[in-house]
Length: 379
Image (cartoon, rainbow, N blue to C red):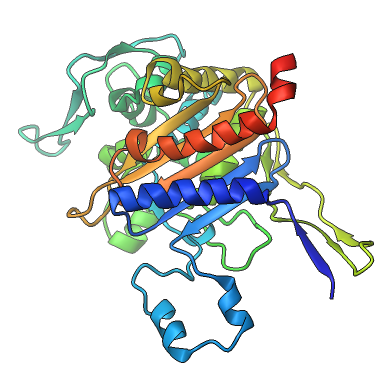
């Protein structure tokens, strides 16, 4: 007879569900997931996995036909995509690769890398007649770190991740170290059953699983969120919260407290830090500036007209099935100057992150502004 009190905001939950469902119908997406966190505590304000089902059907005599229909649905309505969905992450991984490069002093953030061709080439070490081309999604000119984040320049992240010519690069070992520091890889320990970890691949994993050696091209792929790197939307939101709040990785929590029938608190679940001081805040500030530039002049320009300053990153992630469209990603936070909410959104097979996921994010940021109108306008 005890009461379970959640951190979920019911109004936000409805807004996010409706916006996500609308975009799924529009893009003919088979599934989607989104989560909103409190950037300063890890409290889960909204968690949506679609398609879903009506819990109330279990309060009455459930027809076997209805149950069979649900469990046999190929789009798996019982599957919680937020905490258990394996997704290639695409360009939303770039802020964390940038943070790693800053932490390791791999590159001066103001140093400009040449992306005028829109690709780089590397030569096969065993046969110089064979060359491999690693492409950007378009030529970007000369870009420094902030600009590379704003326009999502692949070539920049190939170079700071795997190295190229006079840029040494992080290398896969350091990339793995920092991605795991930000919470990618093992489960985060959310207070829900069924959470799964992702995969940050490395040479030992590739040798054991694929029986192949690790190449520079593999490091390039991980550096832009492709290849064998997979994450959950929950991990993305928690990692972006660490960027937003200055370097603290919070354990995501759904439950606030348990009360008895007289509303007396039986148990209270306080915010819990997993790791803190991940990277110096002044270095994370450079990453945040790049994410803000993505809104003012880059791939997230659709959010520029919001009444509050927001920051974020889109992702368009290739999937193993080449006949499907790409997964559309967005992750970001608001307000930019004092982050309070962080969100991560992925829509399966919906195409570009900028056209599919960002409009959903816009509804969340509008909700936040309307909820905090008085406070925001006094600042």
